[in-house]
Length: 139
Image: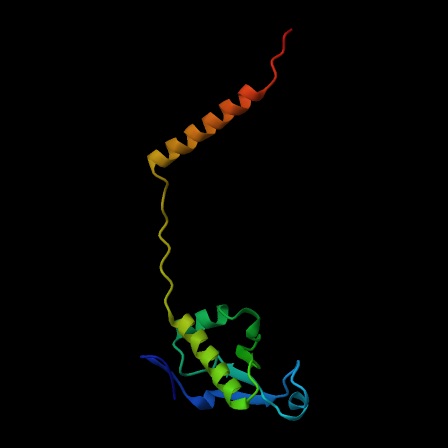
């Protein structure tokens, strides 16, 4: 079990890790050893996630989630499988923690009377400045 928050824990069986060949520089090590990690997690069908966290998690990752609701993350920062696996799981946990935080409710506010007056005074002053720049016609 991976503990995300005090009330959210995810079973490791729900996370599918696949090791793939990493791209980029690294010499022969890149061609021989599958060190990059491909993490898959089914967000829509996971029994571990509460509904509100599931909804926020679907909106959060952007292009990392498929149409079927599967979260896909790649980790290829390090040269070893173990480090990349830890990195993928850490990033996955951070993402779910971010989704578990409830957003603050937006409270609509109105401008104060003083701020309205100040805005209008500034506009009036600016208009006066522009009016004084105009050339005077002598006809």
